[in-house]
Amino acid sequence: MKEALSRLRPRLMEIFTYLHAHPEISWHEVETTNYIVDLLTREGFSPIRFKNSTGLYVDVGNGNPKVGLRTDIDALWQEVDGEFRANHSCGHDGHMTMAIGALLLLKELAPSFNGTIRVIFQPAEEKGTGALSVLKEGIIDDLDFLFGVHVRPVHELEDGTYCAALYHGASRLLEGEIIGEDAHAARPHLGVNAIEVGATIIEDLRTLHTDPMVPVSIKMTKFHAGGESGNIIPGSASFTIDIRAQQNDVMGALAQGVKRVIDSAKILHKVQIELRTVANVVAAEVDSTAQYIMEQAIVQATGLSNLRKPVYTPGGEDFHHYAVQRQHLKSTMLGLGCGVTPGLHHPKMKFKQARLVTGVEILTRAVLLALESGKSEEGSA
Image 1: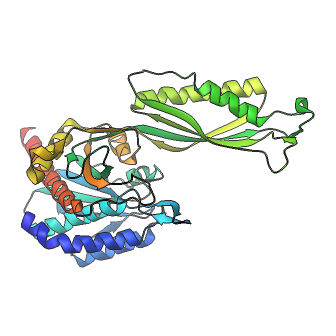
Image 2: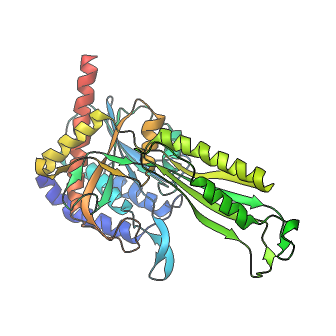
Image 3: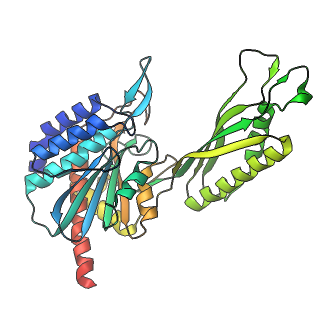
C-alpha cells in the first residue's frame, strides 16, 4: 500500500492544489462537483450526482456489507487580504483530496473484496444542513459504517499524530427580531426601547443553568438597533444567539431555556419577538466498533506511538447528523494532526499537505477493515 501511495503522491498534490485554488461556498459547489465527476469518470469510476443539490457519490464493489466515507466540499466566505471571497480555511480541500485519494488507492491496489465502499462528497457542511440534504437522497440508509475526517489545529493534535474519534459539540444559531415602534427620545413612554429588550434577554440568558460537568456556551453574538439619529428610541432590532453544548440532551435543555427567556421578555416589555433557528448541528455520537476500526487503521499506517486519545472539541460538524438520524449506522471521524496554524477558519490557515497522503492510507485501511468486520458480523448472525 505504501508503494502505491508513493506513486500517487504527486497526483494527490496536484488535486489538492487545484481544489485549494478553486473554492466555492455552500450550495454553490458547481465547478467543484464538475471537477470531481470528470476526474473520477476519467479514472473509470461511475460517479452519481445528487438529485437535489451539488455534490455526488461513487460506489466501488457491490453487495453487502456497505461502508461509507464522507467528505465535505464547500468553502467559507470571509475577508482575505482586504477582500471578501470564498476561502478553504477549514481544510475541506484537504478532505476532498483524501477521499479522492482513497478511491485512487483502491484502484491502484485492485483489491478483491466482498461488499461496497461508497464515497460521498457532501455540500454545505459550513451551513450545518448539507448532511440533512444527503440524508434525503437515501444513500445513507443502507450503509453499515460511515467514516469521516477533519484536519485538526496544533493545540488539539500535534503534527503527525492521529485520533480515532472527534467528539464535536452540538451548536445552534438562532436569529431574532424585536418588532415595535420608535419613539422620540424625550417621550420614552410612547414606545418600547428595543435595546432594553435586548439587555433583558442578555441578562436572563445568564440565568440558564445546566449540568456543570457538561461544557456549554450561550451568548448573544449580534445586535442591531437604531440608525443615524441619536434622539430616536429604536423600537425594533435584530439579533443572533449562539448556543453550544457538548451533549445533545443538554442542548435540548438550553433551547427550551432560551424559549422561556424570549417569552418572558415579550411579556415584560409588551413587545413582539420572532425567533427562528437558522443552523442546528448535533453533538457527536461515536460508535465503539467504528472507533476501534479507526484505531487499528491508524496503528497499521503510522504505528502505535502516533495514536492519540479521542479529541473533545466545542466546534460543530454536521457529519454527526448521520449517526443521530440513522441509529443503525456505526460511525466515527478521523482527527488528522497536520500542523494546522494559526487555526481553523483563520483566513491564513495552512497545514502540512504531506499528511494528506497518510490520511489517505488511514482512511483506506479503515474502510477495508470495516468491510472485514461487517462480513464477520454477517457470518456470525
